[in-house]
Length: 474
Image 1: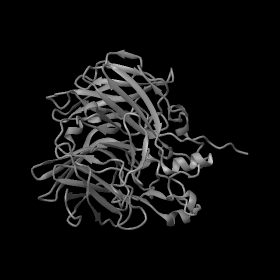
Image 2: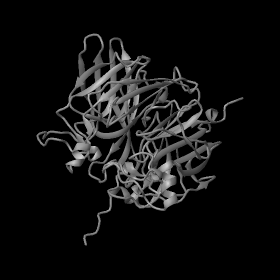
Image 3: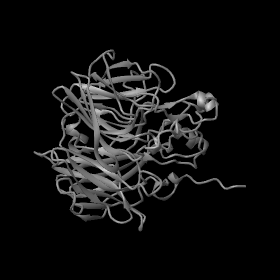
Image 4: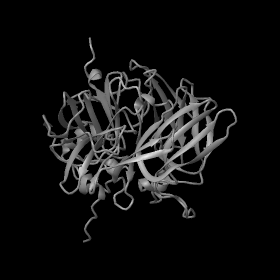
């Protein structure tokens, strides 16, 4: 009998941890800034049982890792997101669902099936209107308490939510509104777009017509517009029935960006065709006179996600994600596009106060292409778009990080006046840290390194919640 090959996403620092703990007064190398006060929370996959089928990184149960910082001290907590699927598998003592990349489970008994796919709530995290939500783009969010990271349960805006909820909602710092979308792979309407008020009220959900269902992981906003990406990563039950991959990148289909007014009814969207591509994450978008500008990490296809391309005729694909820009002229319909940086990097971020507004600075995580699995990230890159240059903060030999979250300094007067926070894993010692870097001087050594009591597996997306938001004045 041939031994089953172990998924690379179950080895090294991708492998799950088994314990939920709380640890106070963590050791610190350096000194935490006195006005850095709040909680850093990051989401990521962490299967509670040995996976069923061919495990991918996106399949694990959601686990939140939080570091609360106050008065120069730090506390660490990690908690599973207690989804319905998590509780069911916990009850039966084994994995029930297979990988997202395998056949959906359409014939499970009704008492153990909430959908053909398990909502793991393992991808994103958003703080809006005094609520923390753990996100997975195929279903509803889960509400989480802070700072203890306890799961309250599914959050559906008083049963008004009638679509999946993206892992990448956008919060407008100026208006306080939050925009999100949900996509369907199997039946129309393939896209629904929603707006939530600053008070947390779901104002509207409108359908947007697409020719077919596509995997749409991210989107963008500006002060007046919302931008969607109709890119040719498709799902097909017919392919599954022919024993072909369910997910496939189809370069014969158009790659399009759709721009719509923020409070539109969904019918006046304008589509702009671009060169064939896939975009996993957008750094930002903004308006300049007649144009909408988008900055994102772009690839020529979806091999970054281990998704095959339908044809083998494309020999010149650039499989690494590169920082890239598009300019869409709303008056003439013209499109300009091009590479900003040819380094491989992903997980773009920025000062969240500039989401949808013109930003001077942006940050990405540099990718080590020579190492498998992909998404091994060895450095932080800071971009100055006004002056056209970048700086790098390397984590060091055998040290790998993730998405960096920007935390503005109190009463900051400059866009980059603040800190960049991310978890870093040290391979030689098999330990993890929360690293704090001065965003205005990222080439210098970290301001502080918070040594964590257990390993933190690589994960996806995080957020920062200031102390004043956690405990607002009555």
